[in-house]
Amino acid sequence: MEILKQRILQDGKCPAEGVLIVDSFINHQLDTQLLMEIGVEFARRFAYSRANKILTIEASGIAPAVMTGYCMGIPVIFAKKAKPCTMDKALQSQVHSFTKNIDYNIVVNSEYIKPGDRILCIDDFLAYGSAAESLIDIVDQSGATLVGMGFVIEKSFQEGGDKLRKRGIHVESLARIEELSNKCIKFCD
Ligand code: 5GP
Image 1 (tube, helix red, strand yellow):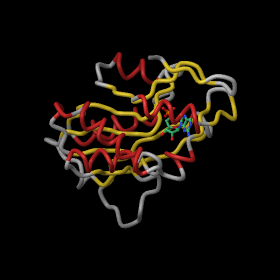
Image 2 (image 1 turned 180 degrees about the vertical axis):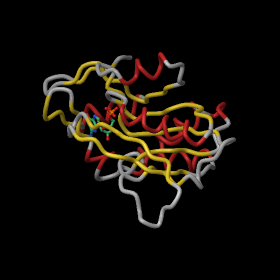
Image 3 (image 1 turned 45 degrees about the vertical axis):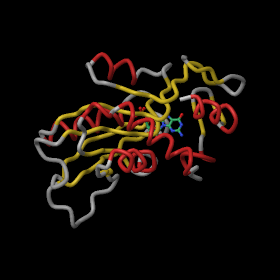
Image 4 (image 1 turned 120 degrees about the vertical axis):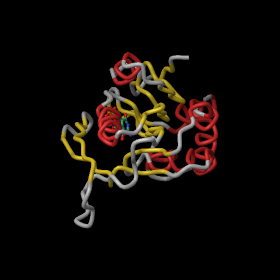
């Protein structure tokens, strides 16, 4: 997605080798026009999929997921990082964050994903794939069908994308980065 790549080149920051900061338009301050275009693009790429729900993880997946859900006319569920005491029946999975080097659980109320649902997962970044794997785990536990996964930015020099594609999952990434340092941001295509 050309407009996204141009914005990453213009406003993305790389404070450490392999880490991209997009706080000024995706992760902290939200550029609503760009996010709507992201939603339109995901909706176009997954139009065939007959997805009836979108699943993401709080907090940074919510904005692109909501825009996509709006464009596709379907609801968005976000996995929570803390289990509210009011949630009885939770689907749970563990995520390892390589950037923070911690493990955490994500939970989704099992009321909202049922067998028969067709789930499209959307997230901001795909890096090593741990967050994506735990979303897949939640979908599997629920008995629903995973129809595809969309990422705003994929760091293709980390192994998440390869792992998901080898499993036969339809993965769409709007900007794929093959090289990332404070001197150079290079895209795959
Ligand atoms: P993974 O589980 O694929 O290793 O990492 C995915 C999650 O880690 C994303 O949801 C995102 O929040 C975070 N993440 C991974 N790499 C980066 C990065 O370079 N920049 C930012 N801002 N977040 C990242």
